[in-house]
Length: 208
Image (tube, rainbow, N blue to C red; front, side):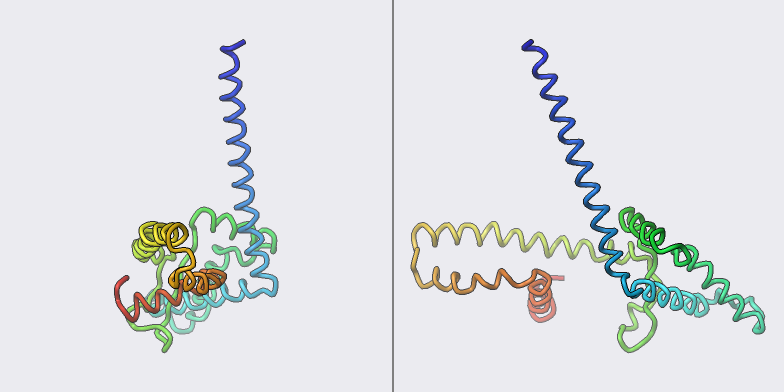
């Protein structure tokens, strides 16, 4: 009896972990699918993808991929390339299949390409036709550095300072100051992130 209990405990723990992992995976898939579904309620996501396809065809022409095509056949070749790319991204699929395909692409890191054309919005050094994965990987180290710096400051300064003020300086002017500033934590993190990037990266140039 005693020998059987550990094995039953291990099997129960394994079943529990598998069940939790399945629920977590299902939650992630459902969350991504619902996000895509809501983002595409008015067809805005479809329009964005179609405009990206058009920019990609223009970039193909700029890159010289249609140089061998005779002028009278150029519109047909561009339309064929546009249709092929739209097929690749699933624009001609039914809505539910298209959203499901985009969900699977998002979960498997197949995020397609991004085209930055030479217009006034983009500086010349970022103009190009890029894989989205390349863009993310290029900026991922800087993101990790900023996140690591934020967590390091939190653990090295925030926690010791809060414990010190709570235990030895309760009611001190510094304690009251931080209490007054505490509502700032209700500001969305992405807003604070933009402000902090503007201060520490753009103005002070302390972070990349």
